[in-house]
Amino acid sequence: MATIDLSVSCDTTLAPALRKVGAAYTARTSARVFVFATGPGLILPQLERNIQNDIVVAQIPLLQQMADQKIIARLPDAPRWRNPLVIAGLSSASPTDGVFAACDPTPASDIDGPAVLAKLEARPSRVLGAVDTDEVASILISREAQAGILHMTDVRAHPQLVVIRPVPPEVQAPLVYAASVTRLSSRPNPQGFVEFLATPDATKLLSTAGLEVQT
Image (cartoon, rainbow, N blue to C red; front, top):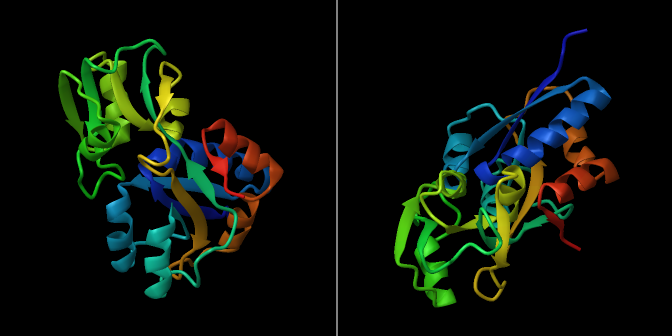
């Protein structure tokens, strides 16, 4: 029997979590799951060019656009996951008024770092711009900055990092994600993986990776 390969497109910050769930799904079904991470502003253009993707895990507004364009059948009702935003560093006592890393507002990023800092009324001595939160994490680990804005999934993906404090939801609401099969899918049973994401085993993995199930 030929091995089934499934491709999953997602935001960069979700990739470590989805790779763990993909490995669990492979152990259960033998279907291999390949996770392709990209900037949130680049997922839709890729799908519009008919680049092969069986499943997409993305922010709700983006999925609504895909539903409107018939790239997915409909906007998924559940499950949905929140990704809390936090200020993080190598220590919970790391200063936030020194060198600070934050995402620049570009299509590759899902956070407008300078806008969040302004809402927090933060005044770091210097702000290092980054393409996305993955780069923010790298800057923190290399000690080029003492603190930075990250998603909880970024912190959980890098054991060296810890949360200094959460970003209040009134400053920046957590991003909310869901999963759907795309019309570009040509492989057997991609819906099986989407349904697996709602199981207790997958929920435990996603929770450990920093995501919160939206109820």
